[in-house]
Image 1: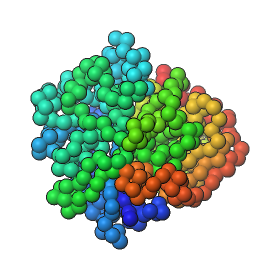
Image 2 (image 1 turned 120 degrees about the horizontal axis):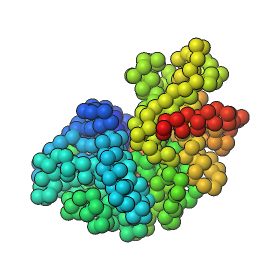
Image 3 (image 1 turned 90 degrees about the vertical axis):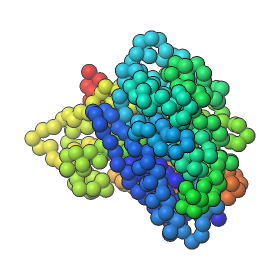
Image 4 (image 1 turned 90 degrees about the horizontal axis):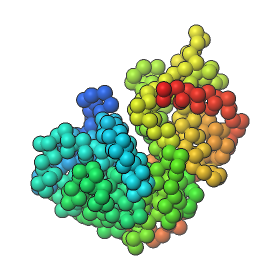
Length: 483
């Protein structure tokens, strides 16, 4: 038996066919457009996401030896999507997790004294990153689209909910706790939508999706809507929780970092809701069909791989993202150059949406290689910032995502953390986690132990000498971005 995993990311959709032994039998990928209507605004056309999903899945299915037995979904989190319940058409573009337009709404709510209560209920903070303030903005600034929400004609949710609606031809309006816990509308302790929060943000609870466990019966694809297939949808999770699951971090204390557009460090805290006073988020990792919840602490870094993309697309100093390693290796260090890639503000553990990027230490001898190396070092420093405030000792870090293929970055990361960094053979662990959840939900695998047996090491990076002076320069530069 095989599983179809759909990974609806920020810039494109990946589809994988995953075998029972955890191998990738085939894959498909399709990009979709990004829209930046104003500085700090990021939008997606939901129809573009759906068409990319169809294209990626069609490619993966063509390479499969046999039809999959079930499907799993993982997705970019926090993005706010509206769609017509009957036609499934979106009345406007989605507001993406990276979007910063709601900073003023967050400040307004903070000034009114709401943040302590919001944090108590949700484990999050008032930041434009999360879904609820985006919905508040839509209610205030796009009354035509919001009228459908208040009348009951328009559904709202995150990308997982939208995809399930499209896959099932509108039969299901659901989400899971890992995605729900990123909205500022879900109570960590109650495990439900909180009426108090819905009222605060002006979101009608009736428009929100039903919350279902992360694996088990979620829905069934409609053949007329989805490539002629009638598959059980039996697993679903937000991308970072899916990656934690895909890395088989099933025990409390196990840590993974996904190096993608941003970087996201999650540590499994088991059945305990662990709070952080140091800028980390408390979130749901997953919920079993029994109702038992597993929680996690998360450090969300907004710009890491996107900084390398900026070197390529914005400055033109490299031709491709993989080229960054070869260029950076031409110099022994960054030559004192420090790059703080706060291109969309600072996430964990600093949380400053107004911060902007900064490059310091430039001299007449600075070359593009120094800037490229400083960019890779910045990614490692950002992750160290988060790991240092997680509390307790980290025995090791499991790395995944596109940038984890950069050997120089992984070695610098091991050096900076002072612990081994392990990279698996399958680095697309976000999609793999969706496959694992779906397979557990439909009987492809019977237990977490079976899934652990499929995890295979590609390379282990042992820590070497740590350049603390470079890290001190980094911390000083971060302080400058907040001024």
